[in-house]
Length: 109
Length: 242
Ligand code: SF4
Ligand code: SF4
Ligand code: FES
Image (cartoon, rainbow over all chains, first blue to last red; front, side, top):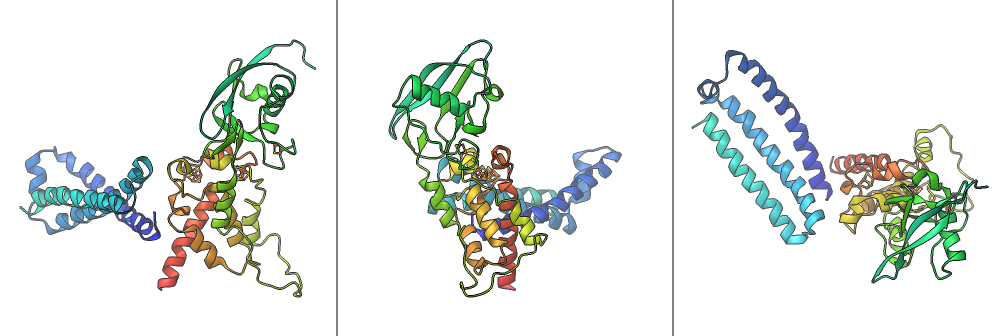
């Protein structure tokens, strides 16, 4: 773990914390009118605010998790050097892709 | 004096750097018996070839640490009745260090990492200068006090899973020493200390789960020292860029 990764992981944690709280707060508020897919999509689709909200979360969580998984595979499976970095980049890109697809589906498409 | 002489079943790890296994002994229980007493009794009465290490027998020198029923402990200050599992005792060489023979480990990696962590004094004065006065209540000195009583026993090093999983990791004791040096106003080279502890095997690898602090026989808190190093490392990153 070098200092850049360490700081990046802390900063992304700082970003995720309020977004998670916001997500839970809105969920509790929204569920009061009953919860259905169409009701959620009605609120989120076409909303640039929710796109940015969940988009930011996906970026932060992808970076955060990729660094965390990098530590785990280095300690558990002794990955080093290029293999380790390639694995971390793969986790990052896979999470960005999956998360990004979900956010697009729920907010913009 | 013991009232009744019960025997304890003691398994002791015997071997060399390449192989080994546990050997069983029956040792008469005594009142106020320490683990070191048990091992010494075996060596004196049953097998003179058993190798183990100790010096002070009073918790000062840090040379007698072993795994006792799976937990790293100072054997001269650990009473048998505190750790006996039923009637059984298992004694093994300290974890995370290479074995030389039987219960004796090679402590070189542990001490080498103290040097690698720059846990050494970087003088700011010559012998001709007057001795600088340090206010005992000053912040740095108070912080140093929390880590200074380390006896280099390597128990925290044996307790640390990050050391197990990452052989480059400097480990709790070396990092704690670096933290005391970093807080010393008489030390002239704090940036060298920070550079040494923030590299690939440095403080940022610590998972902060605190096995080191739980098992330190002197009740020191290396985890806390490492948290201090992490803060100082991050702060220096931003101050250097800014
Ligand atoms: S807190 Fe850090 S140094 Fe202490 S045992 Fe855990 S990983 Fe090792
Ligand atoms: S910090 Fe505690 S456990 Fe670690 S070497 Fe020093 S005295 Fe031993
Ligand atoms: S023999 Fe010195 S600390 Fe145990």
